[in-house]
Image 1: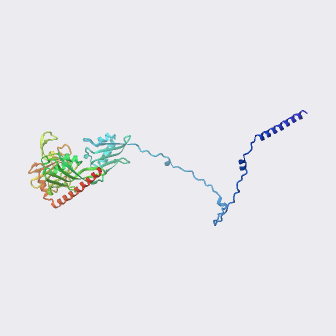
Image 2: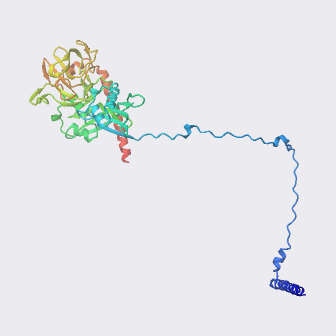
Image 3: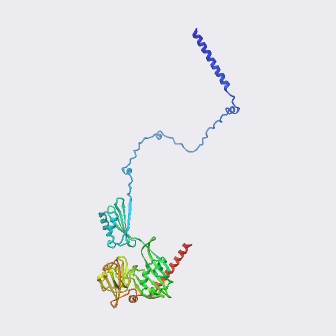
Length: 457
């Protein structure tokens, strides 16, 4: 009885709860807006069936074998040991360079560069095989390229005229000679003499060393101290060997014209290496002259002077031309070789007789050509030796003398050699060379003027 009463009560309570929830749900709903109600009535249009276009193409039928797949395992990528090695790293290099000074040796400079005795000996042997190390002189440049732990890689010796001797360390030490391939360029310039030829050339940015060449050529014809009053015009044409913008060796005069006291003195130097120049006055051949040493510096003139070795005042019986050891020495006029040998303080000497009364002497020579013999006929410009320092000499130079009847005379003022050379000169060819030189000078001066004007604009 009690159980029935409890169940009846639970049923009534549940019915009451359901009724309450239903009533609250109905009362809580708001009316749906008309636009939303209308939107719920939209349905999409039915899709049209796809159109099939008939073509002539045939769709292949795949056979069962066509869709079969075969599994083929690919081999694993193999890496060789060389692929995994690290790249080699070049050691850091250090460059050491020095200009060789007076009294220095190759071995001493290599020692200062940090090289040990064995390396220095190998380098000296290698370079010495290509270049006579006895010809080393101040101004040559030694360059050493080595690692930071002083192991040499390359040694270079820069000597004259852009020539370099290179020793390279590898499996074996190898040496080679590197010579430039210069281009010969012609220049022209004009200068006005106010105080001296040297100062005029320097002011006009023309190689001042040409003053020595002009003094050699005109020393016996023009008195530069007396005849130059100031305001004289000088025009020069010269050649330079160029490797790019770098000059190789020394410049060489090709033509010079000097206006002095109403007369025009002109000199034409040949380009055949003979060194035999022709001097003209007002367009006519005056004389022929050959320089004993091309491009040398006149270091001492004829006359009394203080002797550079003994220190007392003595008569200097010739003129001295300072030049590098081994520079060619040329005969200044045609003649016959009278003597080859040594004469006390003169050292190694060659003497050439020009007729019965005139003789030229070339002293302090380092060498004489093998083919040169006593009694041999030579022409002006022929090489008869090389500059040296044999005998009593303070350094490499040529001592050049002219003796007339056994008595020394000033080589720069005596005309006998010029007369000997003139006897074999061809005036027709000489005048043609003068015309060509004048034309080239005018052309180059016009070109230089046009270039300077353009640069200013």
